[in-house]
Length: 610
Image (tube, rainbow, N blue to C red):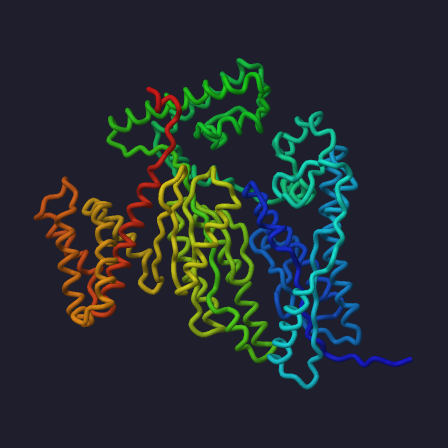
Protein backbone atom coordinates (compact mmCIF):
# COMPACT_ATOMS: atom_id res chain seq x y z
CA UNK A 1 0.00 0.00 0.00
CA UNK A 2 1.39 3.40 -1.01
CA UNK A 3 2.24 5.64 1.92
CA UNK A 4 1.35 9.32 1.61
CA UNK A 5 3.74 11.87 3.05
CA UNK A 6 2.32 14.79 5.04
CA UNK A 7 3.16 18.24 3.71
CA UNK A 8 2.01 21.79 4.19
CA UNK A 9 -1.12 22.49 2.17
CA UNK A 10 -2.67 25.93 1.64
CA UNK A 11 -6.43 25.37 1.75
CA UNK A 12 -9.28 27.70 0.81
CA UNK A 13 -12.98 27.15 1.41
CA UNK A 14 -15.90 29.16 0.08
CA UNK A 15 -19.39 29.09 1.52
CA UNK A 16 -22.56 30.16 -0.25
CA UNK A 17 -24.89 31.07 -1.65
CA UNK A 18 -24.47 34.51 -0.07
CA UNK A 19 -27.50 35.97 -1.84
CA UNK A 20 -29.76 33.19 -0.52
CA UNK A 21 -28.76 33.97 3.03
CA UNK A 22 -28.74 37.73 2.93
CA UNK A 23 -30.57 39.25 -0.02
CA UNK A 24 -34.07 37.83 0.07
CA UNK A 25 -35.63 39.57 3.03
CA UNK A 26 -38.75 41.61 3.65
CA UNK A 27 -37.68 42.84 7.07
CA UNK A 28 -34.38 44.26 8.23
CA UNK A 29 -34.14 41.66 10.96
CA UNK A 30 -34.45 38.96 8.27
CA UNK A 31 -31.64 40.71 6.44
CA UNK A 32 -29.46 40.82 9.55
CA UNK A 33 -30.16 37.22 10.52
CA UNK A 34 -29.26 35.99 7.04
CA UNK A 35 -25.90 37.72 7.45
CA UNK A 36 -25.51 36.47 11.01
CA UNK A 37 -26.36 32.89 10.02
CA UNK A 38 -23.82 32.89 7.19
CA UNK A 39 -21.26 34.17 9.67
CA UNK A 40 -22.12 31.42 12.16
CA UNK A 41 -21.62 28.75 9.49
CA UNK A 42 -18.30 30.25 8.46
CA UNK A 43 -17.14 30.34 12.09
CA UNK A 44 -18.14 26.69 12.52
CA UNK A 45 -16.02 25.76 9.50
CA UNK A 46 -13.03 27.80 10.70
CA UNK A 47 -13.24 26.29 14.19
CA UNK A 48 -13.29 22.79 12.73
CA UNK A 49 -10.25 23.57 10.60
CA UNK A 50 -8.37 24.67 13.72
CA UNK A 51 -9.51 21.60 15.70
CA UNK A 52 -8.05 19.40 12.95
CA UNK A 53 -4.67 21.07 13.44
CA UNK A 54 -4.78 23.82 10.82
CA UNK A 55 -3.64 27.39 11.36
CA UNK A 56 -5.96 30.08 10.09
CA UNK A 57 -4.76 32.89 7.88
CA UNK A 58 -8.17 34.40 7.19
CA UNK A 59 -10.21 35.10 9.22
CA UNK A 60 -7.56 35.21 11.93
CA UNK A 61 -9.79 35.31 14.99
CA UNK A 62 -12.55 32.75 15.38
CA UNK A 63 -14.81 34.57 17.82
CA UNK A 64 -15.94 32.69 20.88
CA UNK A 65 -19.70 32.24 21.03
CA UNK A 66 -19.86 33.69 24.53
CA UNK A 67 -18.01 36.82 23.48
CA UNK A 68 -19.72 40.14 22.90
CA UNK A 69 -17.96 40.31 19.55
CA UNK A 70 -20.33 37.71 18.09
CA UNK A 71 -23.05 40.34 18.27
CA UNK A 72 -20.93 42.97 16.58
CA UNK A 73 -19.06 41.40 13.70
CA UNK A 74 -19.64 39.03 10.82
CA UNK A 75 -17.22 36.43 9.58
CA UNK A 76 -16.57 36.44 5.81
CA UNK A 77 -17.79 33.56 3.67
CA UNK A 78 -14.23 32.53 2.77
CA UNK A 79 -11.80 30.58 4.96
CA UNK A 80 -8.06 30.38 4.28
CA UNK A 81 -5.55 28.35 6.24
CA UNK A 82 -2.53 26.04 6.21
CA UNK A 83 -2.68 22.38 7.21
CA UNK A 84 0.06 19.78 7.47
CA UNK A 85 -1.67 16.73 6.02
CA UNK A 86 -1.49 13.98 3.46
CA UNK A 87 -5.28 13.93 3.02
CA UNK A 88 -6.53 17.44 2.17
CA UNK A 89 -9.76 16.09 0.67
CA UNK A 90 -10.61 14.46 4.01
CA UNK A 91 -10.00 17.78 5.79
CA UNK A 92 -12.29 19.54 3.31
CA UNK A 93 -15.08 17.01 3.88
CA UNK A 94 -14.81 17.39 7.66
CA UNK A 95 -14.99 21.19 7.40
CA UNK A 96 -18.00 20.83 5.13
CA UNK A 97 -19.76 18.49 7.58
CA UNK A 98 -19.15 20.96 10.42
CA UNK A 99 -20.78 23.74 8.40
CA UNK A 100 -23.70 21.56 7.37
CA UNK A 101 -24.14 20.40 10.95
CA UNK A 102 -24.42 23.98 12.22
CA UNK A 103 -26.94 24.82 9.50
CA UNK A 104 -29.08 21.80 10.37
CA UNK A 105 -29.00 22.78 14.07
CA UNK A 106 -30.76 26.03 13.17
CA UNK A 107 -33.13 24.24 10.81
CA UNK A 108 -34.12 21.68 13.49
CA UNK A 109 -34.64 24.41 16.08
CA UNK A 110 -36.94 26.30 13.70
CA UNK A 111 -38.78 23.10 12.77
CA UNK A 112 -39.49 22.40 16.44
CA UNK A 113 -40.88 25.90 16.95
CA UNK A 114 -43.09 25.92 13.86
CA UNK A 115 -44.44 22.40 14.44
CA UNK A 116 -47.13 20.79 12.32
CA UNK A 117 -47.77 23.85 10.17
CA UNK A 118 -45.09 22.77 7.67
CA UNK A 119 -44.87 20.14 4.93
CA UNK A 120 -41.91 18.22 6.33
CA UNK A 121 -40.90 16.71 2.96
CA UNK A 122 -40.68 20.13 1.30
CA UNK A 123 -38.91 21.50 4.39
CA UNK A 124 -36.24 18.78 4.45
CA UNK A 125 -35.60 19.10 0.71
CA UNK A 126 -35.12 22.86 0.86
CA UNK A 127 -32.87 22.67 3.94
CA UNK A 128 -30.70 19.95 2.36
CA UNK A 129 -30.38 21.71 -1.00
CA UNK A 130 -29.31 25.13 0.24
CA UNK A 131 -25.61 25.07 1.13
CA UNK A 132 -23.01 25.53 -1.57
CA UNK A 133 -19.47 24.59 -0.45
CA UNK A 134 -16.30 24.65 -2.53
CA UNK A 135 -12.73 23.85 -1.59
CA UNK A 136 -9.36 24.16 -3.30
CA UNK A 137 -5.83 23.55 -2.09
CA UNK A 138 -2.20 23.72 -3.18
CA UNK A 139 0.90 21.94 -1.86
CA UNK A 140 3.28 24.67 -0.71
CA UNK A 141 6.46 22.71 -1.23
CA UNK A 142 8.70 24.56 -3.66
CA UNK A 143 6.37 27.56 -3.85
CA UNK A 144 6.51 30.97 -2.22
CA UNK A 145 3.44 31.87 -0.17
CA UNK A 146 2.15 34.38 -2.71
CA UNK A 147 2.52 31.84 -5.52
CA UNK A 148 0.61 29.19 -3.58
CA UNK A 149 -2.11 31.72 -2.70
CA UNK A 150 -2.51 32.82 -6.32
CA UNK A 151 -2.69 29.21 -7.54
CA UNK A 152 -5.27 28.27 -4.88
CA UNK A 153 -7.46 31.28 -5.74
CA UNK A 154 -7.36 30.29 -9.41
CA UNK A 155 -8.31 26.71 -8.57
CA UNK A 156 -11.23 27.87 -6.40
CA UNK A 157 -12.45 30.23 -9.11
CA UNK A 158 -12.32 27.37 -11.61
CA UNK A 159 -14.17 25.09 -9.18
CA UNK A 160 -16.96 27.65 -8.81
CA UNK A 161 -17.59 27.57 -12.55
CA UNK A 162 -18.40 23.85 -12.27
CA UNK A 163 -21.81 23.98 -10.67
CA UNK A 164 -22.96 20.87 -8.84
CA UNK A 165 -25.94 19.42 -10.71
CA UNK A 166 -28.93 18.84 -8.47
CA UNK A 167 -32.00 17.35 -10.04
CA UNK A 168 -35.04 19.44 -9.21
CA UNK A 169 -37.39 17.62 -6.89
CA UNK A 170 -40.86 19.09 -7.54
CA UNK A 171 -43.42 19.92 -4.90
CA UNK A 172 -45.76 17.27 -3.61
CA UNK A 173 -48.79 18.71 -5.40
CA UNK A 174 -49.36 20.40 -8.74
CA UNK A 175 -50.05 24.10 -8.26
CA UNK A 176 -48.28 24.33 -4.90
CA UNK A 177 -47.90 27.95 -3.81
CA UNK A 178 -44.54 29.60 -4.33
CA UNK A 179 -42.66 31.37 -1.55
CA UNK A 180 -43.50 35.06 -1.43
CA UNK A 181 -39.80 35.84 -0.79
CA UNK A 182 -38.18 33.33 -3.13
CA UNK A 183 -40.04 32.43 -6.31
CA UNK A 184 -37.68 29.50 -6.90
CA UNK A 185 -39.00 27.63 -3.88
CA UNK A 186 -42.42 26.43 -2.77
CA UNK A 187 -44.14 27.49 0.41
CA UNK A 188 -43.79 24.98 3.26
CA UNK A 189 -47.19 25.77 4.80
CA UNK A 190 -49.92 23.21 5.36
CA UNK A 191 -53.09 23.95 7.30
CA UNK A 192 -52.13 27.59 6.88
CA UNK A 193 -55.64 29.05 7.33
CA UNK A 194 -56.18 27.20 10.61
CA UNK A 195 -52.91 28.51 12.12
CA UNK A 196 -52.91 32.21 11.17
CA UNK A 197 -53.01 33.31 14.83
CA UNK A 198 -49.99 31.22 15.68
CA UNK A 199 -48.07 32.47 12.66
CA UNK A 200 -48.81 36.08 13.60
CA UNK A 201 -47.40 35.47 17.08
CA UNK A 202 -44.24 34.18 15.40
CA UNK A 203 -43.93 37.40 13.37
CA UNK A 204 -45.25 35.90 10.11
CA UNK A 205 -48.02 37.79 8.36
CA UNK A 206 -51.17 36.14 7.08
CA UNK A 207 -50.34 36.70 3.40
CA UNK A 208 -46.72 35.48 3.63
CA UNK A 209 -46.22 32.09 1.97
CA UNK A 210 -42.68 31.29 3.07
CA UNK A 211 -40.11 28.67 2.12
CA UNK A 212 -37.97 26.89 4.72
CA UNK A 213 -35.02 29.28 4.49
CA UNK A 214 -37.27 32.34 4.89
CA UNK A 215 -39.01 30.75 7.89
CA UNK A 216 -35.68 30.07 9.62
CA UNK A 217 -34.65 33.70 9.08
CA UNK A 218 -38.00 35.01 10.30
CA UNK A 219 -37.73 33.02 13.54
CA UNK A 220 -34.49 34.79 14.45
CA UNK A 221 -35.99 36.29 17.62
CA UNK A 222 -36.70 32.78 18.88
CA UNK A 223 -33.56 31.11 17.54
CA UNK A 224 -31.30 33.88 18.81
CA UNK A 225 -33.13 35.40 21.83
CA UNK A 226 -30.00 36.95 23.38
CA UNK A 227 -29.52 39.30 20.43
CA UNK A 228 -29.81 42.96 21.35
CA UNK A 229 -33.11 44.40 20.14
CA UNK A 230 -32.91 45.06 16.41
CA UNK A 231 -34.56 48.30 15.30
CA UNK A 232 -36.76 48.24 12.22
CA UNK A 233 -36.39 50.87 9.49
CA UNK A 234 -39.56 52.48 10.85
CA UNK A 235 -38.00 52.79 14.31
CA UNK A 236 -34.76 54.08 12.79
CA UNK A 237 -36.53 56.80 10.77
CA UNK A 238 -38.48 57.68 13.93
CA UNK A 239 -35.37 58.33 16.09
CA UNK A 240 -35.18 62.13 15.49
CA UNK A 241 -38.80 62.52 16.60
CA UNK A 242 -38.11 60.25 19.56
CA UNK A 243 -35.42 62.72 20.63
CA UNK A 244 -38.05 65.47 20.57
CA UNK A 245 -40.34 63.37 22.79
CA UNK A 246 -37.57 62.96 25.35
CA UNK A 247 -36.18 66.48 25.27
CA UNK A 248 -39.21 68.76 24.78
CA UNK A 249 -41.70 68.71 27.65
CA UNK A 250 -44.84 69.74 25.77
CA UNK A 251 -44.17 67.16 23.01
CA UNK A 252 -43.66 64.39 25.57
CA UNK A 253 -46.93 65.35 27.29
CA UNK A 254 -48.88 65.37 24.01
CA UNK A 255 -47.50 61.93 23.10
CA UNK A 256 -48.46 60.55 26.52
CA UNK A 257 -52.03 61.84 26.04
CA UNK A 258 -52.19 60.36 22.53
CA UNK A 259 -51.04 56.93 23.71
CA UNK A 260 -53.51 57.07 26.59
CA UNK A 261 -56.29 57.66 24.04
CA UNK A 262 -55.03 54.73 21.93
CA UNK A 263 -55.20 52.52 25.05
CA UNK A 264 -58.80 53.60 25.56
CA UNK A 265 -59.71 52.86 21.94
CA UNK A 266 -58.18 49.39 22.19
CA UNK A 267 -59.97 48.84 25.50
CA UNK A 268 -63.33 49.67 23.98
CA UNK A 269 -62.83 46.82 21.52
CA UNK A 270 -62.16 44.46 24.46
CA UNK A 271 -58.71 43.74 23.03
CA UNK A 272 -56.08 42.18 25.22
CA UNK A 273 -53.09 44.53 25.56
CA UNK A 274 -50.02 42.84 26.98
CA UNK A 275 -48.20 46.11 27.73
CA UNK A 276 -49.99 49.40 28.22
CA UNK A 277 -48.70 52.09 25.87
CA UNK A 278 -46.96 55.10 27.41
CA UNK A 279 -44.20 57.55 26.46
CA UNK A 280 -41.55 55.03 27.57
CA UNK A 281 -43.13 52.02 25.89
CA UNK A 282 -44.70 52.36 22.46
CA UNK A 283 -44.40 51.23 18.87
CA UNK A 284 -43.04 53.73 16.32
CA UNK A 285 -45.64 52.52 13.80
CA UNK A 286 -48.35 54.27 15.82
CA UNK A 287 -46.90 57.60 14.63
CA UNK A 288 -47.27 56.86 10.91
CA UNK A 289 -50.77 56.49 9.49
CA UNK A 290 -49.70 53.89 6.92
CA UNK A 291 -48.14 51.69 9.61
CA UNK A 292 -50.97 51.69 12.17
CA UNK A 293 -52.63 48.74 10.44
CA UNK A 294 -49.38 46.72 10.65
CA UNK A 295 -49.21 47.42 14.37
CA UNK A 296 -52.81 46.32 14.95
CA UNK A 297 -52.33 43.16 12.90
CA UNK A 298 -49.07 42.03 14.51
CA UNK A 299 -49.16 43.31 18.07
CA UNK A 300 -52.83 43.32 18.98
CA UNK A 301 -54.20 40.93 16.34
CA UNK A 302 -57.42 42.88 15.84
CA UNK A 303 -60.17 40.96 14.03
CA UNK A 304 -60.42 42.05 10.40
CA UNK A 305 -64.00 43.29 10.79
CA UNK A 306 -62.87 45.83 13.42
CA UNK A 307 -59.41 46.68 12.07
CA UNK A 308 -60.30 49.37 9.51
CA UNK A 309 -62.52 51.40 11.85
CA UNK A 310 -60.01 51.16 14.69
CA UNK A 311 -57.15 52.17 12.38
CA UNK A 312 -59.11 55.24 11.20
CA UNK A 313 -59.93 56.23 14.79
CA UNK A 314 -56.25 56.05 15.81
CA UNK A 315 -55.22 57.98 12.67
CA UNK A 316 -57.70 60.74 13.59
CA UNK A 317 -56.18 60.98 17.07
CA UNK A 318 -52.69 61.04 15.56
CA UNK A 319 -53.53 63.95 13.28
CA UNK A 320 -55.21 65.76 16.17
CA UNK A 321 -52.00 65.43 18.20
CA UNK A 322 -49.83 66.72 15.35
CA UNK A 323 -52.05 69.76 14.78
CA UNK A 324 -51.99 70.50 18.50
CA UNK A 325 -48.17 70.23 18.58
CA UNK A 326 -47.80 72.53 15.55
CA UNK A 327 -49.94 75.16 17.30
CA UNK A 328 -48.04 74.86 20.59
CA UNK A 329 -44.73 75.01 18.72
CA UNK A 330 -45.68 78.38 17.25
CA UNK A 331 -46.58 79.61 20.74
CA UNK A 332 -43.24 78.34 22.10
CA UNK A 333 -41.31 79.51 19.00
CA UNK A 334 -40.07 75.96 18.61
CA UNK A 335 -39.30 74.32 15.28
CA UNK A 336 -41.53 71.25 15.60
CA UNK A 337 -41.01 68.56 12.95
CA UNK A 338 -43.30 65.59 12.39
CA UNK A 339 -41.53 62.20 12.16
CA UNK A 340 -39.94 61.61 8.77
CA UNK A 341 -40.60 58.28 6.99
CA UNK A 342 -37.12 58.38 5.40
CA UNK A 343 -33.97 56.57 6.48
CA UNK A 344 -30.49 55.91 5.06
CA UNK A 345 -29.12 52.55 3.88
CA UNK A 346 -25.30 52.43 3.68
CA UNK A 347 -22.88 50.05 1.97
CA UNK A 348 -19.11 50.56 2.22
CA UNK A 349 -16.25 48.64 0.65
CA UNK A 350 -12.47 48.96 0.69
CA UNK A 351 -10.83 50.04 -2.57
CA UNK A 352 -8.31 47.87 -4.45
CA UNK A 353 -8.41 45.16 -1.77
CA UNK A 354 -7.70 42.46 -4.35
CA UNK A 355 -4.60 44.36 -5.44
CA UNK A 356 -3.46 44.72 -1.83
CA UNK A 357 -3.94 40.98 -1.30
CA UNK A 358 -1.90 40.18 -4.39
CA UNK A 359 0.98 42.23 -2.97
CA UNK A 360 1.14 40.06 0.18
CA UNK A 361 4.27 37.92 0.01
CA UNK A 362 4.21 35.81 3.16
CA UNK A 363 1.89 34.15 5.65
CA UNK A 364 2.65 36.51 8.54
CA UNK A 365 1.88 39.60 6.46
CA UNK A 366 -1.43 38.03 5.44
CA UNK A 367 -2.26 37.33 9.11
CA UNK A 368 -1.51 40.97 10.02
CA UNK A 369 -3.77 42.05 7.15
CA UNK A 370 -6.55 39.77 8.42
CA UNK A 371 -6.14 41.11 11.97
CA UNK A 372 -6.51 44.67 10.69
CA UNK A 373 -9.72 43.73 8.87
CA UNK A 374 -11.10 42.19 12.08
CA UNK A 375 -10.27 45.36 14.04
CA UNK A 376 -12.01 47.47 11.41
CA UNK A 377 -15.10 45.24 11.54
CA UNK A 378 -15.31 45.76 15.31
CA UNK A 379 -14.82 49.50 14.93
CA UNK A 380 -17.49 49.66 12.20
CA UNK A 381 -19.98 48.08 14.62
CA UNK A 382 -19.12 50.70 17.25
CA UNK A 383 -19.43 53.56 14.75
CA UNK A 384 -22.90 52.40 13.70
CA UNK A 385 -24.01 52.12 17.31
CA UNK A 386 -22.63 55.58 18.14
CA UNK A 387 -24.64 57.03 15.22
CA UNK A 388 -27.91 55.25 16.14
CA UNK A 389 -27.52 52.86 13.22
CA UNK A 390 -28.07 49.12 12.84
CA UNK A 391 -25.18 47.06 11.51
CA UNK A 392 -26.46 44.38 9.14
CA UNK A 393 -23.07 43.07 8.04
CA UNK A 394 -19.53 43.99 9.02
CA UNK A 395 -17.02 41.43 7.80
CA UNK A 396 -13.56 42.25 6.46
CA UNK A 397 -13.65 45.50 4.52
CA UNK A 398 -17.42 45.29 3.80
CA UNK A 399 -20.03 47.17 5.81
CA UNK A 400 -23.80 47.15 5.40
CA UNK A 401 -25.99 49.18 7.75
CA UNK A 402 -28.96 51.51 7.96
CA UNK A 403 -29.22 54.73 9.96
CA UNK A 404 -31.35 57.80 10.60
CA UNK A 405 -30.89 60.40 7.86
CA UNK A 406 -29.39 62.99 10.20
CA UNK A 407 -26.45 60.74 11.22
CA UNK A 408 -25.62 58.90 7.98
CA UNK A 409 -22.97 61.29 6.64
CA UNK A 410 -21.10 61.52 9.93
CA UNK A 411 -21.16 57.71 10.17
CA UNK A 412 -19.76 57.41 6.63
CA UNK A 413 -17.01 59.89 7.46
CA UNK A 414 -16.07 58.04 10.67
CA UNK A 415 -16.01 54.72 8.79
CA UNK A 416 -13.63 56.17 6.25
CA UNK A 417 -11.31 57.62 8.93
CA UNK A 418 -11.29 54.35 10.86
CA UNK A 419 -10.53 52.32 7.72
CA UNK A 420 -7.56 54.55 6.83
CA UNK A 421 -6.20 54.47 10.37
CA UNK A 422 -6.52 50.71 10.93
CA UNK A 423 -5.64 49.40 7.46
CA UNK A 424 -2.88 52.00 7.11
CA UNK A 425 -0.81 49.92 9.53
CA UNK A 426 -0.59 47.03 7.05
CA UNK A 427 -1.04 48.48 3.53
CA UNK A 428 -0.13 51.76 1.85
CA UNK A 429 -2.76 54.45 1.14
CA UNK A 430 -5.93 52.50 1.97
CA UNK A 431 -9.19 54.13 0.86
CA UNK A 432 -12.86 53.34 1.35
CA UNK A 433 -15.82 54.01 -0.93
CA UNK A 434 -19.29 54.50 0.52
CA UNK A 435 -22.71 54.38 -1.14
CA UNK A 436 -25.81 55.67 0.63
CA UNK A 437 -29.42 55.61 -0.52
CA UNK A 438 -31.96 57.73 1.36
CA UNK A 439 -35.36 56.19 0.87
CA UNK A 440 -38.87 55.73 2.27
CA UNK A 441 -39.52 53.06 4.90
CA UNK A 442 -42.19 51.45 2.69
CA UNK A 443 -39.78 50.74 -0.19
CA UNK A 444 -39.19 46.97 -0.58
CA UNK A 445 -36.01 46.03 1.23
CA UNK A 446 -34.59 44.12 -1.73
CA UNK A 447 -34.98 47.22 -3.90
CA UNK A 448 -33.34 49.41 -1.25
CA UNK A 449 -30.36 47.05 -1.13
CA UNK A 450 -30.10 47.17 -4.91
CA UNK A 451 -30.11 50.98 -4.90
CA UNK A 452 -27.50 51.14 -2.16
CA UNK A 453 -25.26 48.71 -4.07
CA UNK A 454 -25.66 50.91 -7.15
CA UNK A 455 -24.57 53.97 -5.15
CA UNK A 456 -21.57 52.04 -3.85
CA UNK A 457 -20.64 50.89 -7.38
CA UNK A 458 -20.73 54.49 -8.58
CA UNK A 459 -18.51 55.57 -5.67
CA UNK A 460 -15.99 52.85 -6.54
CA UNK A 461 -15.67 54.10 -10.10
CA UNK A 462 -13.56 56.99 -8.81
CA UNK A 463 -12.67 55.33 -5.45
CA UNK A 464 -12.24 57.10 -2.11
CA UNK A 465 -15.65 58.64 -2.73
CA UNK A 466 -19.05 59.20 -1.17
CA UNK A 467 -22.09 58.65 -3.40
CA UNK A 468 -25.53 59.60 -2.05
CA UNK A 469 -28.78 58.82 -3.86
CA UNK A 470 -32.21 60.14 -2.85
CA UNK A 471 -35.20 58.04 -3.80
CA UNK A 472 -38.53 59.72 -3.13
CA UNK A 473 -41.65 57.65 -2.52
CA UNK A 474 -44.25 57.94 -5.26
CA UNK A 475 -41.93 58.84 -8.13
CA UNK A 476 -39.84 61.84 -9.04
CA UNK A 477 -36.28 61.97 -10.30
CA UNK A 478 -33.65 60.01 -8.41
CA UNK A 479 -31.24 62.64 -7.08
CA UNK A 480 -27.58 61.57 -7.17
CA UNK A 481 -24.62 63.30 -5.57
CA UNK A 482 -20.98 62.18 -5.91
CA UNK A 483 -18.26 63.64 -3.66
CA UNK A 484 -14.57 62.70 -3.27
CA UNK A 485 -13.59 62.07 0.35
CA UNK A 486 -10.26 63.82 -0.13
CA UNK A 487 -12.11 67.17 -0.10
CA UNK A 488 -13.63 66.47 3.35
CA UNK A 489 -17.20 66.84 2.05
CA UNK A 490 -18.90 65.97 5.34
CA UNK A 491 -17.00 68.61 7.31
CA UNK A 492 -17.76 71.18 4.63
CA UNK A 493 -21.45 70.29 4.64
CA UNK A 494 -21.55 70.76 8.41
CA UNK A 495 -20.36 74.30 7.80
CA UNK A 496 -22.84 74.79 4.96
CA UNK A 497 -25.64 73.70 7.28
CA UNK A 498 -24.77 76.64 9.54
CA UNK A 499 -25.03 79.01 6.55
CA UNK A 500 -28.16 77.47 5.01
CA UNK A 501 -30.20 80.66 5.46
CA UNK A 502 -27.99 82.35 2.85
CA UNK A 503 -28.67 80.07 -0.11
CA UNK A 504 -31.65 78.50 -1.83
CA UNK A 505 -32.25 75.31 -3.79
CA UNK A 506 -32.45 77.44 -6.95
CA UNK A 507 -28.91 78.69 -6.31
CA UNK A 508 -27.57 75.16 -5.81
CA UNK A 509 -29.20 73.79 -8.97
CA UNK A 510 -28.14 76.83 -11.03
CA UNK A 511 -24.54 76.13 -9.99
CA UNK A 512 -24.92 72.56 -11.22
CA UNK A 513 -26.32 73.79 -14.55
CA UNK A 514 -23.46 76.29 -14.82
CA UNK A 515 -20.97 73.47 -14.29
CA UNK A 516 -22.63 71.37 -17.01
CA UNK A 517 -22.67 74.29 -19.47
CA UNK A 518 -19.02 75.18 -18.94
CA UNK A 519 -17.94 71.56 -19.04
CA UNK A 520 -19.56 71.23 -22.46
CA UNK A 521 -17.95 74.47 -23.69
CA UNK A 522 -14.51 73.68 -22.24
CA UNK A 523 -14.10 70.55 -24.38
CA UNK A 524 -13.79 72.62 -27.57
CA UNK A 525 -12.58 76.02 -26.32
CA UNK A 526 -8.88 76.80 -26.12
CA UNK A 527 -9.52 79.98 -24.09
CA UNK A 528 -11.03 77.86 -21.30
CA UNK A 529 -7.95 75.65 -21.05
CA UNK A 530 -6.15 78.08 -18.70
CA UNK A 531 -7.12 76.92 -15.15
CA UNK A 532 -6.43 80.33 -13.58
CA UNK A 533 -8.56 82.19 -16.11
CA UNK A 534 -11.34 79.60 -15.87
CA UNK A 535 -11.29 79.76 -12.06
CA UNK A 536 -11.74 83.55 -12.12
CA UNK A 537 -14.54 83.33 -14.65
CA UNK A 538 -16.39 80.65 -12.71
CA UNK A 539 -16.07 82.62 -9.48
CA UNK A 540 -17.76 85.60 -11.15
CA UNK A 541 -20.58 83.27 -12.20
CA UNK A 542 -20.89 81.91 -8.64
CA UNK A 543 -20.96 85.40 -7.11
CA UNK A 544 -23.52 86.61 -9.66
CA UNK A 545 -25.82 83.67 -8.96
CA UNK A 546 -25.43 84.07 -5.18
CA UNK A 547 -26.98 87.55 -5.41
CA UNK A 548 -29.50 86.66 -8.10
CA UNK A 549 -30.89 83.59 -6.29
CA UNK A 550 -30.54 84.80 -2.70
CA UNK A 551 -33.43 84.21 -0.25
CA UNK A 552 -35.74 87.21 0.06
CA UNK A 553 -35.15 87.39 3.81
CA UNK A 554 -31.44 88.22 3.32
CA UNK A 555 -30.37 91.70 2.13
CA UNK A 556 -27.45 92.18 -0.25
CA UNK A 557 -25.19 93.85 2.32
CA UNK A 558 -25.52 90.95 4.76
CA UNK A 559 -25.00 88.44 1.96
CA UNK A 560 -21.85 90.22 0.81
CA UNK A 561 -20.43 90.47 4.31
CA UNK A 562 -21.23 86.99 5.66
CA UNK A 563 -21.91 84.55 2.82
CA UNK A 564 -19.72 85.63 -0.11
CA UNK A 565 -16.40 85.30 1.81
CA UNK A 566 -17.40 81.82 3.02
CA UNK A 567 -18.46 80.84 -0.50
CA UNK A 568 -15.12 82.10 -1.82
CA UNK A 569 -13.31 80.03 0.80
CA UNK A 570 -15.21 76.92 -0.25
CA UNK A 571 -14.57 77.42 -3.94
CA UNK A 572 -11.10 79.01 -3.95
CA UNK A 573 -8.92 77.02 -6.33
CA UNK A 574 -6.54 77.35 -9.24
CA UNK A 575 -6.48 73.66 -10.12
CA UNK A 576 -9.40 71.82 -11.72
CA UNK A 577 -11.83 74.73 -11.26
CA UNK A 578 -14.66 72.95 -13.07
CA UNK A 579 -14.42 69.95 -10.74
CA UNK A 580 -14.31 72.31 -7.77
CA UNK A 581 -17.51 73.97 -9.01
CA UNK A 582 -19.19 70.57 -9.42
CA UNK A 583 -18.28 69.55 -5.88
CA UNK A 584 -19.52 72.86 -4.45
CA UNK A 585 -22.85 72.50 -6.28
CA UNK A 586 -23.27 68.88 -5.14
CA UNK A 587 -22.49 69.78 -1.53
CA UNK A 588 -25.10 72.55 -1.59
CA UNK A 589 -27.70 70.26 -3.16
CA UNK A 590 -27.01 67.50 -0.63
CA UNK A 591 -27.21 69.95 2.29
CA UNK A 592 -30.61 71.19 1.08
CA UNK A 593 -32.00 67.70 0.51
CA UNK A 594 -30.85 66.44 3.90
CA UNK A 595 -32.65 69.36 5.48
CA UNK A 596 -35.80 68.66 3.44
CA UNK A 597 -35.84 64.94 4.13
CA UNK A 598 -35.49 65.63 7.84
CA UNK A 599 -38.67 67.71 7.71
CA UNK A 600 -40.57 65.52 5.23
CA UNK A 601 -43.55 63.66 6.58
CA UNK A 602 -46.53 61.87 5.14
CA UNK A 603 -49.75 63.77 5.59
CA UNK A 604 -52.51 61.77 7.21
CA UNK A 605 -55.80 61.23 5.41
CA UNK A 606 -57.42 63.71 7.77
CA UNK A 607 -54.93 66.48 7.00
CA UNK A 608 -55.30 65.90 3.25
CA UNK A 609 -59.07 66.26 3.31
CA UNK A 610 -59.45 68.96 5.94
